[in-house]
Image 1 (cartoon, rainbow, N blue to C red):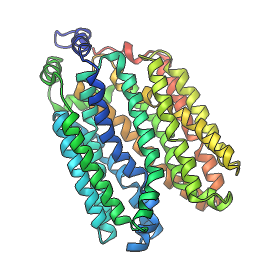
Image 2: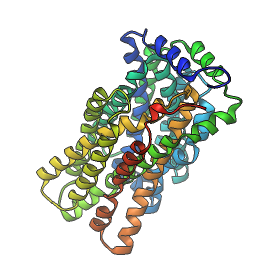
Image 3: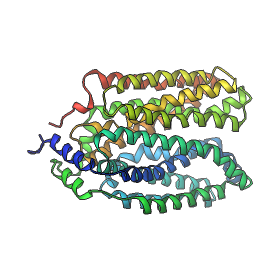
Image 4: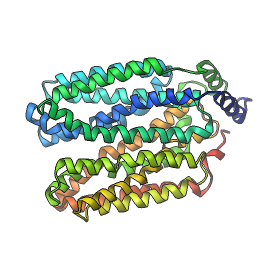
Length: 425
């Protein structure tokens, strides 16, 4: 009970209203996910543009690394604060503004004459990404019943796989079309963002925003600080973050260094290694949908998380042990299938009993901040180990073990109780 209100009845009110939504709920959610995932496309394909950028404005290797990680540092340092602030705004306007600002900062990057201007443009672009994220939580609570929250994560994972892997394959083509000039390529990304913003204006809608806000206000939250305090109090939020940290450490490290290793030790071209990387991004999207469809709640997620951790650690390590291109493709696909765990871990805050929409947004921000920690330190740690031990292959083999944090998360989530049984006292 919270100030005389039953958290169970509160959830039942939201569930009953969301169950009335028709098929258009997936149109709205998919439109949001397309807009949101486009930001990750930009963040994860910068490596393809770096050689051209470095030649143009004379970047050192250190500056290239800083530039590549800039959006993730924004996520790590600002996500909780920005999510707390932007979660008070309605999703329609929040997505519209952040897409417009994202396009502007992409055009700024396309114009940037110096490293500092380019860095600030990319950092600001990362802030727009995290500012948009709370809209996901609010839209899910407005449109989807509880039983479909895992599927929402699966849809997000599917869009990530398709859009990011597509970006890895198409960006070199766009760059070649502009004769290797990264500036019009970056400007084309800005135009792409404007088009997505227009699509959101047409398709994006809100549903029962007043009702959702009223339910939250009657839940007994007293002041803005209590929202943050409550979001930080859930044990499951930190466990989910631990799982993500290790998985993203390996993901970002292999994205950064596998092409170099493949070229130096396996004599595999950059386009060939790009295909290999795309093949462990794309399958995860489809496997995430299958996992989300089979698991409507929290029961059974622990074995899947543990299995995914073992599969990912094993396949990342195997990618450092063979130079067969066809075998690397097979290993990469198996690795991608392991990423089907994503919706189960990302949706942990949505299954916490008694948690309210803005609290979910902040809890998700905590989880993704820890994921950003993995993305930030993974490449740096791999590079440091390479310099210390003199072997890139050995460094990647060591970092390949980091997804085993998923096994730890599985044990901790299933040890005492499930998140669905958690009650707000």
